[in-house]
Image (cartoon, rainbow, N blue to C red; front, side, top):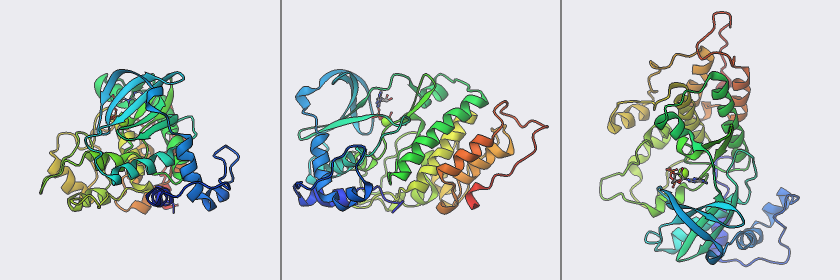
Length: 346
Ligand code: ADP
Ligand code: MG
């Protein structure tokens, strides 16, 4: 269904170690999606093999940074690439390996100019890594929060449009991003490139630092959590319990990104984590006191941050609404009539 990550079949396949058969459909562009589904058992393992990169073939360069996933290196593999290495001290069971392979099997389905190019993965322990194209620009996070860049309205809308296009494509392919945030959105000479879709399960399993009654919360993460995700934080004690990420929770994240683009800061600024968890879980939205913007612009925020997941608009609706926004000014122009875009309810 639209709420799944599309990895159900793959997980079963990998767990069952089903070998590919001769009838496997090719993973090429002409593959009929219906055939792909019918043959998912064979095509998943086939495609996993097709995307396997022997670790020795990678020419690993310098460290770009460290994240939840592990260390990210720049490198060379038929050109400049980013190599995301999973920290192997955390991959000590079959389950983590299976989760990794399942995530990898969804990447083969992603071909969109606003999504980072997935090139392959090293899937043989002790070397697990994901290889993607190397993003040359800076992340939206760096632009907004480090460089304090101010985008004009036309650029802000252009960026939001491209994010919606990439995200709309992911959702149409049955993939939930699960970690849409400004740190995972690059801007390369005007082009938006979204990274790290579908990787959250792996990071959760690898970096499970929760002990006893403690919950480890990465900095800057809370403001992207939809109420339903926030409310389930407390029950995520066992490894088996995942957080309920859905396409709707991705929309909530988009709302937060839209806010950051408009305001140049995080929602809930200055609030302690406990207060954010309590307020969002109870249906309170971040204050818009710092946002000088037209009604239409705020309506997008409010719709994306709807308490009820199904009231949040789909990316196709968001695109239509963004298209209608006046591109000239951030503040409401008196000559522009207030247009209430209630796309969430349409
Ligand atoms: P986070 O997304 O939380 O910053 P990551 O592990 O995804 O953590 O990234 C670690 C660092 O590597 C970040 O500085 C990020 O910008 C950089 N990075 C990740 N993917 C790429 C990529 N494809 N191209 C260039 N830099 C990347
Ligand atoms: Mg990232």
